[in-house]
Length: 240
Image (cartoon, rainbow, N blue to C red):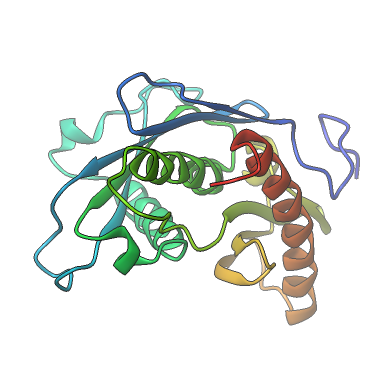
């Protein structure tokens, strides 16, 4: 099949990460993946939730989509007096992904909250939140070291996320909305810089899929995450 934006089947959309996008956050960036735009801000507090062991820190995330991020206006979660099931599921994914990158003992008794707000959604908002969220988290941790709060960075490894799917029986990397909305199979993948899997979410939207198809989609995601890793390193100046 020919993709609407003329990309190859294994090609990412154009990706741009602008760091220090917000003045007051300890770490922030705007990540643009094609027409998807997510603002990621990391905030540091000198306390931790009750469930966290003494002497350790915590990393969590929140996710929200602005009312006109999509083609039609959506209601704010606050108007429903609770978080939408989709937002809750995505922010748990982002939180788990980012926690995997941090040594909580080295972080000490601090909490880093990464807010991911979708300014414009055209597919892949959860994986863009993971990729951009890590950059914001790394910048916040860098600031803690530069300010003398921490003796060394608690970051253990980079984290990236990307989607793949099967559309018209063709495996494709990094689906935009027009592809994702008619995908037969949808898979989101989060990986570290070693190419190790942190999380996979795979769903047969239109049909079941085979193990071989899952492996092919994972292979596409591995290629995409490797390219996103290079973009992250450039945005961070090659260091945490």
